Length: 226
Image 1 (tube, rainbow, N blue to C red):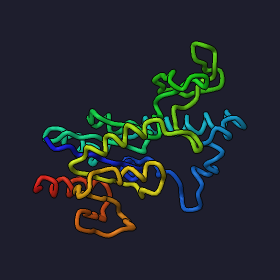
Image 2 (image 1 turned 90 degrees about the vertical axis):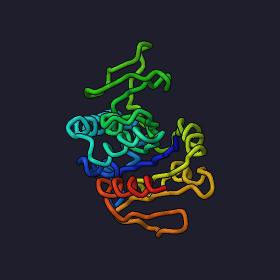
Image 3 (image 1 turned 135 degrees about the vertical axis):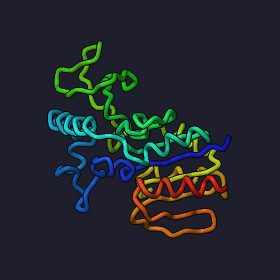
Image 4 (image 1 turned 60 degrees about the vertical axis):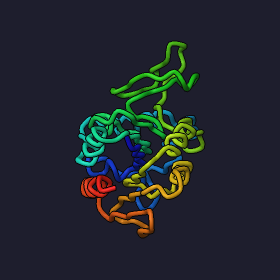
């Protein structure tokens, strides 16, 4: 069974109603990203950071997976599929994908500020005073700027075993995630799906200038011809 590795970014979930990471002026929901997505920002104003993610969490619970999420889930009927996502939502899982690796953490989980491996499922608001069993404040289980990406080594291992690569809704400009495409074997058929691609098709790279809900289905049609 061929192994399809799928790298997804914010554009994957945008059509479900989740906003992409940053707007053109670098702000995230009106905030400087370092205020709400860094250890320094959390130390300076934890209430602001917690409420920022509370708003994101509430929004996530109101949206549903889109057609592209479901198309990827159905692929598991015919292929081995591994999804490596930069997204912190659970829309891949809700659509039915069973093998999802979250590079940047998960919005519906929280972790102890004392022990980063002390992780709990969390679907309600997270506030000051919510503590782990050892009495330390809980924080969003999100990889912030300046923090290590603990799942990157596993993601590299996954990419190294790809027979086919799909890249969906990501500029592939945020490192270390952007480096993953270079770990797939040479000559691997690759499909890049983005409505405004910054690159063009080459021998083994097929660029599909479409949003995810259109482009993923088209890519799957092409994959089935291989």
